[in-house]
Length: 421
Image (cartoon, rainbow, N blue to C red; front, side):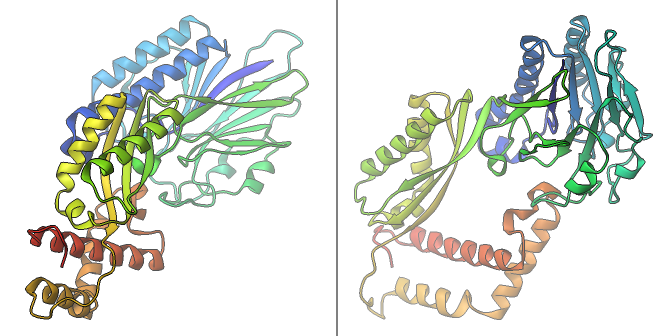
């Protein structure tokens, strides 16, 4: 029997600039979460008495130069070395930019594959099924062509395990890196492919098990949900047993609050509290980090938009009472009940009409909005560029929604009565 833990996309010490600006305390929790998840991976290796840890790329998060990160990794790799647990690493697109990857001095039991494909046979007791681990690292941050053809062929009579950082056929929020297909991987004759790069978990079982473990710790709301690693057991009959093991310290989740018919501010705060508590009870991670979406038809619609900062403070307080619960952001999708036509002499009514009928629908405004969004999107990292939509239709829809939400917020702040225009 041969056992290993398979992980990828740890993005150790990933910077959290925007979150830090909004809430430094929450940024501290999330900033340390990647290390916490990594420690859990190490502890899992000890608990399950595995033979190896496989890291399929993006252990780091780019051009890291911190020696604190280097010392942290070296310490835990030495712990694995002392327990006789080997480590096999391929560099991904983020690791290729890291100076630590090339400069860190590691125990001999840690194998970092180079840009030249290698096949390493594992030393095993006589009579045990031979195990061969194949790996190939990114030499540069980009790999637009498939690397699969550069791997050494499967060793006959052995259980062949491949480690590859790849986008497969592509995924939303991920640029193409060493693209290949499930059929391509299956055709290699390998028994298990340990993949990395796509942050969402996927498993294909069969004669060739192909696993994308997802990331062990999410870093923002676009990486919501529980995170994990994969524990793999290759039995003496060459069968492969795959288990998912949770690792995330903090879990991002979207929380919906139904504001339909709510007329009292305290009742709204209580509804937020109930929704957060319900989600907190569902989440097994140490911390819940919630993006709260408040939607519905309510007389409080204008006040909610005008006083979002006050409602956020109320939500933060309710979350602190629940414990290990954080509100990352409020999303407001509320509107007042439909009313009859307002007096035309009301200046707010007239302003609302001009915004809705003349400005938001004008070609000049739409062109300016698209230009601004494209400029912002171009400055985002690849994994965040789908924030405005993954295609042209969703892009236009997102901009329309943002424009209308912005207009509603402006009107709410101009209305001193809180009754709407």
